[in-house]
Image (cartoon, rainbow, N blue to C red; front, side):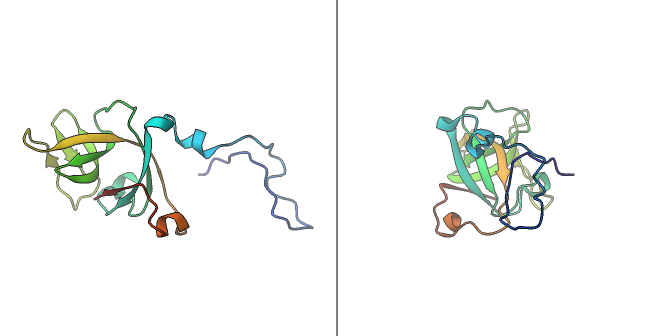
Length: 144
């Protein structure tokens, strides 16, 4: 099911009524919709298949908020032994969990280099390649 967002649209075609005719135009900013803490937010691109059971697929855009406090079972971006990873954090058992049966949980040991870089608060799927991403202008890359 899709919830329609009431925004006026015009296709520039005469003779057909726009399906959005009944809607009133609302001011909509994707920045305001997707980013709650602009000064503490960065954007990354997912790589790999380890998070697909929570709806994050290879190439998806991740909106990562550093201001949000980590909670058990949050999807995070972390620096784990020098690699940026996107995983579910199990704070009670100190583990990084994948959302795929193909990847085993990873225990965070005291000797591991580990830091949470932020919480994934939104993910976006591009159904056509973005010219910005093709040119390599993505800010970060969250792998596996």
